[in-house]
Length: 83
Image 1 (tube, rainbow, N blue to C red):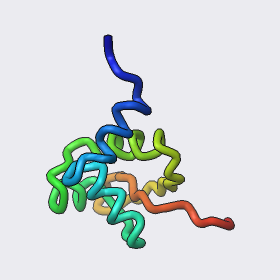
Image 2 (cartoon, helix red, strand yellow; image 1 turned 180 degrees about the horizontal axis):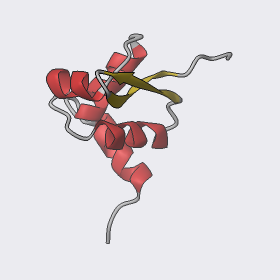
Image 3 (cartoon, rainbow, N blue to C red; image 1 turned 90 degrees about the vertical axis):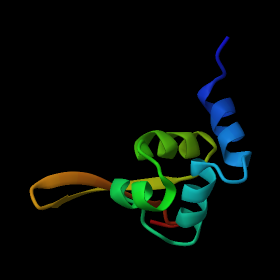
């Protein structure tokens, strides 16, 4: 029997040095997180999956798509309280 995404996200969030915890802390401190930054800072190869886990916990995260050098990638940041 597999755990739900929310249960898995909650378990990840509460683990002291989990990727979710490190990414959440970076977002809460006002940083924007990109896949390359996540790989370098947190050893995270699947940033979109970790963002989905964090969203499942209720964290409001905005996604912005950016293009640089002909490559498209996502940037994530906390959503503003009032748009």
